[in-house]
Length: 543
Ligand SMILES: Cc1ncc(C[n+]2csc(CCOP(=O)(O)OP(=O)(O)O)c2C)c(N)n1
Image: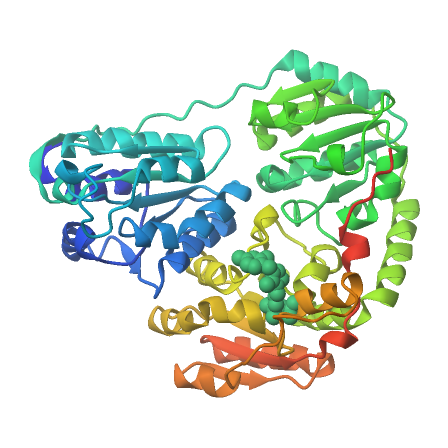
């Protein structure tokens, strides 16, 4: 298409070219031309506007992580984009494809330091630190190619957040814009056959192979299972790799249970993972490491692997399995041994974190296998990392290594926007929930029937517990003044329930899902009765 249009129209045409149909956006004067253009195209774009820019960012991240499709959000510059900063950091940590669209002060005023509305010193510098790629359009005609590049960055290589600044007068200005009919191809990373053969050779000769999966393996679930079964290799995952292999599979081992496996492994195959075990649990010359990753830098981060296959997991894993098949590799079953190991681990943690496990058992009983669980920095959230069974890819959503208190509920809203037919459950502490609890307004307005559990212990419970364990019980800055969560929730028109304890929780969750609208379930909790999960979560070197 070659036509005269405003920068805002060029932006919408360009987004549509990449099948964007949902925008998480919060308006402001710098974005007025964009919202005005959206008015004319409001049938083509679903616009969800939350009550804080952090939520716009988290919703885009939740949308991206749950669906694998880029999540797009638009916010004003300065305070708006800074408000979304922690969400960009979480998206970065989780390798989520998120496009942040923002604006600037008028071009003629950039870097003048006049102190105009929403001015920030060096906004591009800030954006460049929080993203994989960022750019500014200085003419409407540049917008299509910059949007193409944004999507190429998100979808080619390692997915990560990107940002595009379009100054307000460029959004408003009309110019001749060329939008090519075909969008550019994103070149697939070819699978290096030699690297695959070298990896197969190492794995074929391994006595104790171990597979570690991360977020980059989420779209390779079926082939990872086939490979693991051929090798009879345990598949270890922490947060980001949950669901790649179903927890119901005997070869699926939670990260927290894998120290002994790491200790005895002779070949480790890391698939789409930072493989933090390398620096957390240690390496020695007897351990050979194979990496499958789209990001070459990631494979070299701690130390160079014996073999690196630089490709998408969904392309490389089947090739590796075929190469092993050609070598006639088909190991005898270790399922009994590993199932016994799982059982021993479960009975161990059930002794120490039993109260959290009881809540998680209730959650799992009420959440369908394809339901999506959104973790938070709360007691039940930490234990979920290893004790909540996860059955399908992309059904365990987290803020990853950012560990962002308050991200959960806002992220869950984006998950629900991506997957309207699925059950979505968010767990929260009373501390974390109030970061974005006002987004109940957004859930109501946009009909996002997330069920949020709020574990109410009247404290920043984790801090309280740490002060008890590690700081001689000198408690400070942990007691909270809370609203009446039931009355608060009802004031938005959402369903409010109270669970009497773990025994009651599955029924309450069932009731909330059956209601079909946004719901909050308050769960009173005694923080001092909770178990201490950090012995399972803090890795100790074994090599
Ligand atoms: C953005 C951010 N701020 C602060 C923290 C530190 N932090 C971690 S857990 C926590 C307390 C959480 O309390 P609550 O949400 O009530 O959960 P509980 O531990 O009581 O279950 C805090 C303040 C963090 N992880 N992230």
